[in-house]
Length: 324
Image (tube, rainbow, N blue to C red; front, side, top):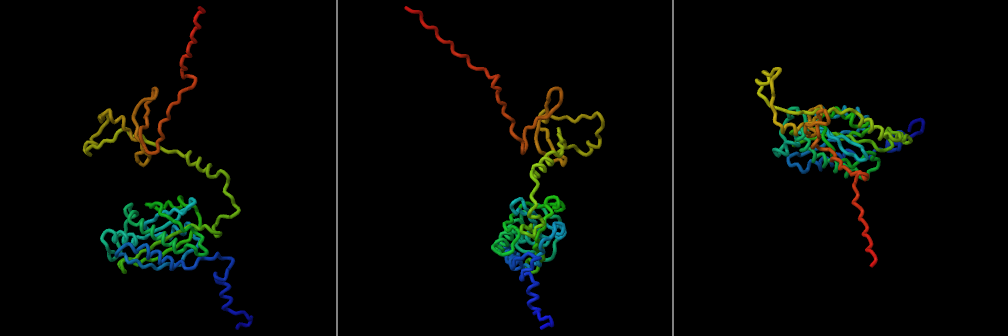
């Protein structure tokens, strides 16, 4: 025993998180085996995948910038719905995406890494079920565990083709980062999976006594709705031979049918067609009349003015017959 008379083993227990250090929140136990079992359950339906997971140590309460920096370069990133307007992130690297695609198309995992490529919508569709199974299994493994301060009911939201906009889509809120290395196809490929879930417990950076400014949501909505949105009216699109286009000069005429005036395209600045309209006139000026398009409200039904509605003539009272 040391000269101070204090047991060093007891000192270690007091310093450990299990000893109730007030400076550190209690963390749930069994996260690593829960991740291993959840990933195993997610990979079980895929014959030939033979997934074996090696979890990393969880990283608690990371800033959003650190979470984004940890995402695999060029990997598949999707947003998850976490309820109450909260979102989480799930990402798969090239190896995991390629292995999941291969077992669903060829029934096996090809040996060796594939060529780097940008994830596509087809990749997102073919990996969505695996991510959903993993989220459901991980929620079941951690249900009822003490110290869970992140939402467990995560569901697949949408695939992000360009994850560089995550800082604009998500608030700068701390997240817990769970990750694992995946052995796929009995060593044919290796992959990575990451899950970043927002902190909802007392170790969130939002002060408990700080109430949201009244009307903030309404003010923000007014600011967004007041921002300019540019629309372009495209009267006609024609496909011409390149030789004809190169020979165009001032005074040339490009004919079109009268029916083209009824199918004017209203597009955004990216050229995406939003509405259909027809060309016409409003007073002395040219104008377009919107005829179709997603999100258009129906034309208002005119209500007659009560003052202008003609009343039916009142019946003329019959004259009493003269006395006999």
